[in-house]
Amino acid sequence: MKQQIHIRYLIPVLFGFFVMGFIDLVGISSNYVKHDFHLNDTTANILLIMVFFWFAILSVPTGIFITGFGLANIFPIIFSIALLKMPEHKNEISGLMMMGIVGGAVIPPLMGLASDNYGQTAAMLVLLACLFYFLMNSLRIKTKKELTKQEL
Image 1 (tube, rainbow, N blue to C red):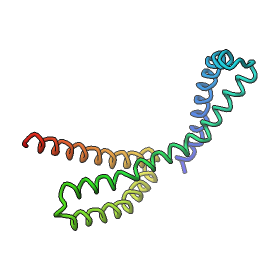
Image 2: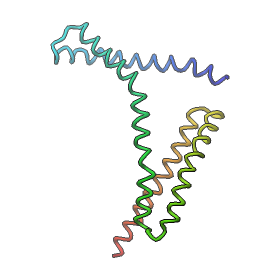
Image 3: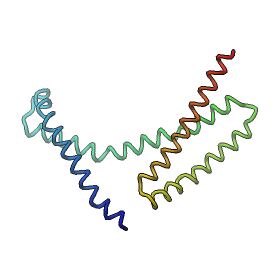
Image 4: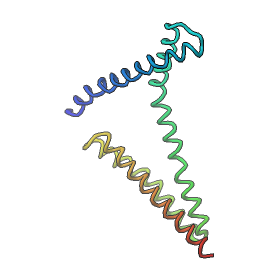
């Protein structure tokens, strides 16, 4: 409950700074917009304010979509690389695929636990740790592949 009180005060402050930064941007760029499109002051400022609201309303859903779209293809790519590398172990690799699917049932509760105890940032750090793990494994696979080519 105490955490919600802090967030209740934090969001308007952050939004206020966002608006102040945007107002500076409107002041600087309205001259360029007026000159480029031959507009008067009012029309140029309304146009830039419409861009602000478009960004504020659509940036979060767009970010969620792009993140989901980007993360959705990581596992099939890793799975296909593993099958190409070791086709004789296709049953074991399929078992690992099932473990990955089960991991989708394990990581979100861990994120929820971190969020409940330490806040939303901690939940995102759990996801960041998983992505870092994927990055390290992909770099290790790439390094081993390069070493194999050099040996030939």
